[in-house]
Length: 450
Image 1 (cartoon, one colour):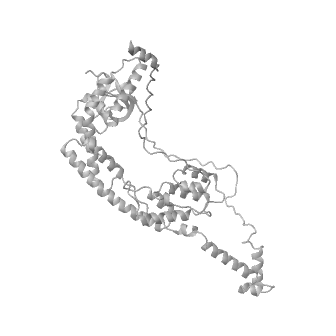
Image 2 (spheres, rainbow, N blue to C red):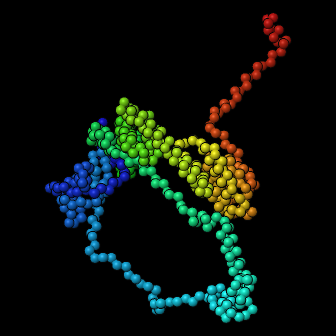
Image 3 (cartoon, rainbow, N blue to C red):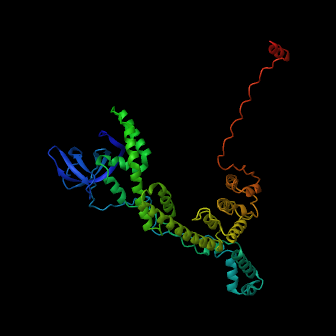
């Protein structure tokens, strides 16, 4: 099969290349900076002045079946020798360098009631002098008593001071994502002819559908430029032949990376590699690797589940209801139920957080956390705000299907539950049989006699 040198992808690549030699025909040979591949030829007319053999420049190249074609060379940035300065313009007004602002005559001033009381205390005379100093019922004593009483009520009043003083829990570090090597993929590419490497790269990026889409884009570009189109089916057939081996090599790279970091890598990446083993593990060595991955995933999930339960129990004990509700909705083991006692505690804490004294914003926050937690059916709100905000009513309507009993407290009827699964379509009843013509008895007897 003949492959024409038409750009395989319309996406341009930016590369750092090193000019290796100059040729008599006005071109330069180049290779990727610091590597042997890719390499090719470059028209000297694209190079800026002062660039020669041994220099490294940034270029933009398009890939075709024969290699990379350099289309643009970017000018190198010249380092500045002089420092950069920021000019301070100012407001343009002539203002004094030092300013002062005097406090108004209020409770802290010298001319208010407190100032007069201090004057009387300093003089020792007046009607309330002695009693004010001893706090035995004078004006100062009564005011000081009210101040102490108010401070006591504020101290005992809500949980805000305690909440601000409560230390934040340590943040759990995010699990690193999977970063596989390329050893097996590189070996699979070397086993293919050089002309098929770009096609193989496209298969690795998005499979056979990506190849079909890339060819369609090339044909659109060729039609716009008046060039002949490429036949889609030969390239797609070739991609289908090389796809199993390439995907198996890709899975092998990912599987070996998971094995080396099974204790740290994100569980989602481990599960994706285990799920792909059914189609990618084609030899005995790969199947053994897949069995090792399944055992490692089971042990890792069990360990993460125990840590999740410990963290959830500590969060409930600290009174962080919203955080506990959100944490309960993300178990490491899908479908694992909460322990009965822990679920009861969490539901009770959520019910206590939904009272008439809670603000609408807080009510909406707790409701959103309840709606996606596994204990949402156990939560019973103790009250609703007397004047709920529009935002709270919108949240209740949005989550009515997940919290129907709470929605009814606001006078909102939850939608009817949708039937799960598609189910089989009931075929239409068969049409009735055609009616037979009615023949009189006399005609029947006459015909029989004849």
